[in-house]
Amino acid sequence: MNQLINDYNKIVFPELGWEFNIDPTAFSIGGINIQWYGIFISLGLVLAVLYCFPKMKRFGIDSDRAFDAVLWGLFGGIIGARIYYVLPNFHEFQQDTFKDTLLSIINVRNGGLGIYGGIIGALLFGLIACKIRKVKMLPMLDITVIGLLIGQGIGRWGNFVNQEAFGTNTNSFLGMTGGRIQNVIMNEMQIGGEMYENGLEMVWSDPVHPCFLYESIWCLLGFVLLAFWSKRRKYDGQILLMYMSWYGLERAVVEGLRTDSLMLGSIRISQALSIVIFITSVILQLVIGFRVKRDPEAFVLYSTTEESRLLLEQRRLKNSGMKEMSVLAPDDDDDEIGILDDDDDEGTDAAENDENDIAENDGDNQDNDDDSDDDSE
Image 1 (tube, rainbow, N blue to C red):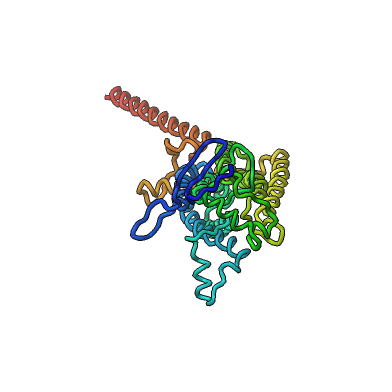
Image 2: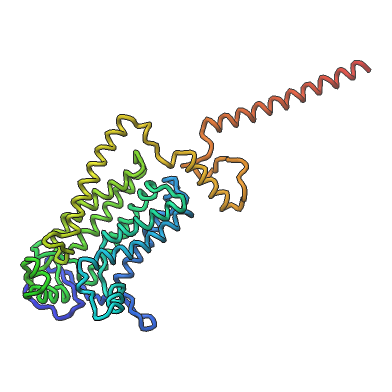
């Protein structure tokens, strides 16, 4: 394809014959522009919440307590994502005065968020909230990363609309181009441009790798796999380690294709971090997996502990309007987690049968006493 695209909103997949014309601004409310990027991020978040909260019981977590951790995690994620992007590019945010510099840093409406910074910030703030609200961290992280894959898989389509986070030139049938993509390549390939300075050789007229698509598919596939495996996990934290290796592997590869990587000298920061995360998580899975096989009784899922069962029962009784818990009885609706074990249930049934037998014997004795009285008369 050697045709110059003058319409910045036009996106083309030449080999597939697909053309789209999408304005990054979805609509305006009271003079405020609502971007498609924000809509996709919000949609991913909503879907993640809708999936995760009903599943928290399976991990032994009280969803009411976890809600606070999620809110703090979101807050920390935004801060962390911005810091991760700003620090390597601080020169771009420097203004004449400190106030103007600060305003440019906190103005996220113009873009500039780093996913790894978001994950780190969310973990930091979320884990602090878990500590305060007494939510077990590893089970919470296990369910959280499954939801995170949903958010990442959906949110990446905001990059598609903005024509950003694309890769180098490719002749793949999935190659894409667009008005904004061509404009960025032409400007950045000039002397002093970011691509030029990073040693990238780009041709504006050729399609580029749709990195957003690669990551979206990988994350959504990872969500399916981890959601399936979560029912078979052997220890708390296993899903977290699987996420780290799954996402770390993909990001290490795809980051090498991107043209907008955050750089530290000649090192792609996110790619280097991805490699470290992948290797570390694989080693930990091998070590812990060996220990689980050797001594499975040493690894008990939190959801099977009495502490978890008690907390979940307290929440159930609280939601049903009971202030105090005098008797712990299993709920017919809670098939996965009950308060009394099967043995306890059998013991309760046996006790009830004994009481019935005693009552029957008392009745028989009373009848015998009546008969004795009649005989004496």
